[in-house]
Image (cartoon, rainbow, N blue to C red; front, top):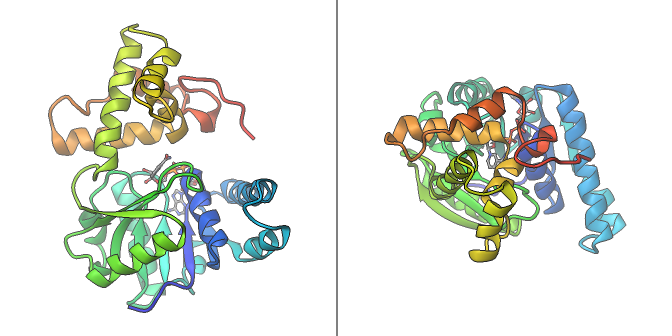
Length: 287
Ligand SMILES: NC(=O)c1ccc[n+]([C@@H]2O[C@H](COP(=O)([O-])OP(=O)(O)OC[C@H]3O[C@@H](n4cnc5c(N)ncnc54)[C@H](O)[C@@H]3O)[C@@H](O)[C@H]2O)c1
C-alpha cells in the first residue's frame, strides 16, 4: 500500500473542518467539501482562525500558516474533492444510509488503492463498507472533538478491512501527532460505548433534579479528574450527534443502558443542539 499523500474530507461541520485543519497543519494537501455552501465557507474561515490561533500560541510561524492554508482547497462536490485523494475521510451526519450512499457514489471516481475512512462514532464499519466493490479499503478513523486538541484516534477494523489499510491509517494518525488505538468493529467501539453511558446518565440525573448541570459536571471534573464534565461534553459534541449515537447503540445492544432520556429528545426537537446552536445544557457564545 503506497503512503497517503493527498487527503479529501467530506463534511465541513464540527469534525470535518477540524480534521481538515489537522491534516493541513501536518503537511497534507486537503480537499474539503460540504453539501451546504454556507457550512463549507464557515469551515474554511474556522480553519483560517485555527491557524491564526496556532501562530498566536507559537505553534506555527506566520509563514507556516500561509503554507498550511495554501494546502487547503474547498470544492463544491465530493466527486471533485476525491480525484487526487489517497485517503477520503467522511464527517457527514451519523446515518448509515447517508454514509453508504456517499461512499458508493465516489468509488468510481478513485483508484482501487484509495482508502475510505468514516469518522462515525458508533455505526458498523462493515455495514458502511457493504455497498462497496473494494470493501477492504474502508475503515473507521474516529477523531475526537476538538480535533486539534484531542490526542486519540480510534481506528476501527471492519470485517473485511485490509491489514495494509489499517497500517497506513495508523501511520497517518501518528503523522498528525495523534495516538491511534485499533478496535474491533462493534457498536460504539471503545470510546462511544463508554462515554455515552456517562453522558446519558448525567442527563437522567439532571432530569431528576439530582443537581444542577454545573454541579453534575463538577462531580466528574473535580472528583474524577475528567477535563470536561459529561453535560458540557454533550454540548460540545452536539446533542443531535449524541442522540443519533444513543439511538443506534440502543437499537443494536438492547437493554436500557443506551435508551435516550426524554429530555435529550426534547432538546434536540427544540433546536437546543449545544455549542453549535448556542444553547444546550449551557449557553454558548459562538465565534
Ligand atoms: N461532534 C462530535 O463531537 C463528533 C466526535 C466524533 C465523531 N463524530 C462523528 O462525525 C460525524 C460528523 O459529525 P459532526 O458533529 O461533524 O456533524 P455536523 O452536523 O457538524 O457536520 C456534518 C456536515 O456534513 C454535511 N453533509 C451532510 N450530507 C453530506 C453529503 N452527502 N456530502 C457532503 N456533506 C454532507 C452537512 O452539511 C454538515 O455540514 C458523525 O458521524 C459523528 O457521529 C462527531
